[in-house]
Length: 310
Image (tube, rainbow, N blue to C red; front, side, top):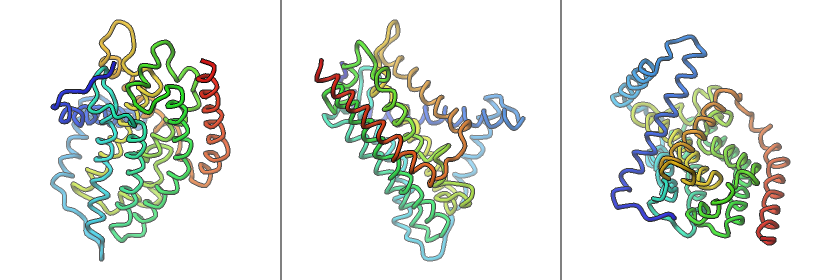
């Protein structure tokens, strides 16, 4: 049973999400250090990350010719804000900030909000590289969004509700990932997509001198880069109640199961970032539309038939 969290959870949620995102960054950098032969001890990796953060905090913001400053700032700030708002409906064990009756729709709306934020962050500087990066995000989103939405529809159909707490309760006997693996895979791919990380990192690609990150420096760069990892952590956290039974599990408190499952999903996403090369948009779009989308629709039909028979 999911219950409303105390008022102070509004302050705790960003801290918990930030802790997950920080752990993901540390794990990612440790993998890079091991692959390059550099010191990979957690202390050394953490020290390097802290030094980089400190440098960005005192760094100067970059200016460009005739930028739209308001749109630029709104885009930069909008990415982490969307991630924080998205997890308002994600339960940590038995607690959730607000178990909205349309919680699945709320999460999807916040994910779509990142499209607008990243596009604005690319358009605002009035720079060719960042502009192309912003439009890459839109093109990428158009490819993964429908499979993502049908994955969410399958979960909502199986549970008979858009409320995340009800979805968790419907998995008491069998997690949805067991009989909806296609939906689970589509959801994880979309998490990598809306956080534009790993194989879907083209909006911030090195071939564009950083894309949407090309013209941001100082605090702006820190906020936008942190937003990507916050989105990744938010997507991993949402995968747990949707497909992995939320806080359900033997022996441990419900919140502990939620944390362990989130860490496992986040670890898999970070590993994918380093194991799978960047996917070019012209190759990803046909795969998403011609393969992944029909598979998720069939998955939804299976869920509907199971519900009718039940």
